[in-house]
Length: 293
Image 1 (cartoon, rainbow, N blue to C red):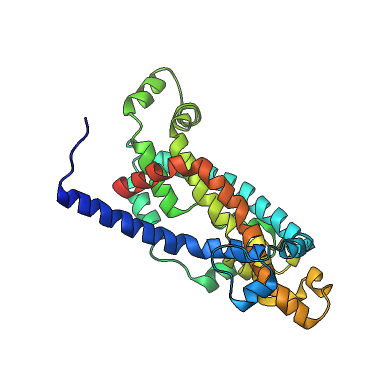
Image 2: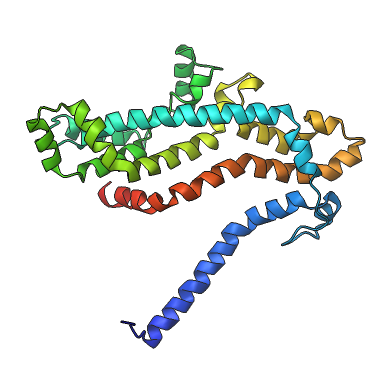
């Protein structure tokens, strides 16, 4: 049955639509401009005539970016950090969240506030750097995946999801002779696909965009993730091997702006392609943390 809306409801809906459309345009336009500028001719971009559609479509910027060896080494490193790091994150977060969700675990009322304390107070940059150095992880791949193995916020979300699984399932499994590891692997994890998908998205995006840790702890350029390569291109694009092959300084300046935009698109496109497949789990997973955290 169709519900007839009052005049106030219609006005409220119209205002909501207008505001949502305005926020969408403000959020989306910068990324749209980067795409359009990367596909336009350098002269059009430098003259400021590019606004909503490509002018003088030119793919030379992508040709320059994709021929640079550092881009591909950055891709390899970022994919390595994202895959290995996300697997470690999921395993460690699950192993920590499960016992904290069990009411039979006596220590959880003491341990959980201590864990939550780390959300607001940390050791600081220098003590953390000294710790990483003393552990011998400086300038190694593991420094990008081990120190951040568990996010406190994500741990709270996963613990809250586990708490919603009916206790009767645990009791039935225990009566059948199952131990905690069996219950976690064969019952809890298969029932937790939505929160697992959300955690995968959170951790994977975090690793893909990781920049500051690499800046602090990595010295070897062959270990740099894609975001470090992107920083180098944005700041020092003249040093790119493919840029050196381009004629004069004026020619490099002309194409440099479009190369920057093309590099941004190349570095962000893969993670954007993953997001639609996990989006349907995103809202439910975040709401769980908001209600029960």
